Image 1: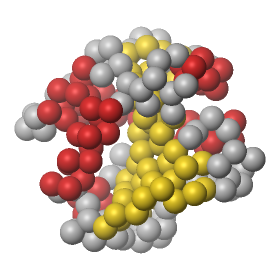
Image 2 (image 1 turned 180 degrees about the vertical axis):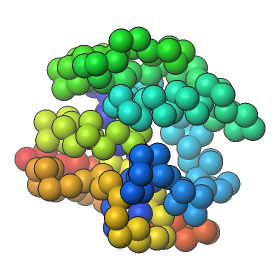
Image 3 (image 1 turned 60 degrees about the vertical axis):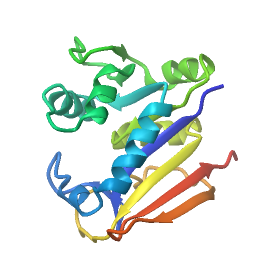
Length: 185
């Protein structure tokens, strides 16, 4: 059975996005050769990427026109993608499938194939999948900044989940990579 892995860059106070949609300026604090290498490694291991509607639209807009990102751009545009949305009419980004009902749809996908499924961003989707108990691992890059206000990846709507630390790694630019296994209740 495949693993569902959440991957996100967050601030020390848990924001995955700033005050406004797509305010990701804090990503610049941690982006560099080390995080680029990790991004490539994860994309090469991934069997599929999953997004909520808002993240999908932003990622599709960026990656279909991205220049200068080399291998990352090629992988982002070629890998199988799923967008979980009840309202999106058509998926324009190459190699994308729409799933209308995220929890049963991703449970089915999890049972097929063997490579991991990664979820990028997509706070509302992550929250619903965490509450449904189908996320296996959380990987975070902690950016060395406190925003004080922004969209939290985990908020008051999340059920309590116990985590087991699998890895922690410091980046030269002050970021920290954390990998956690989500323990089953």
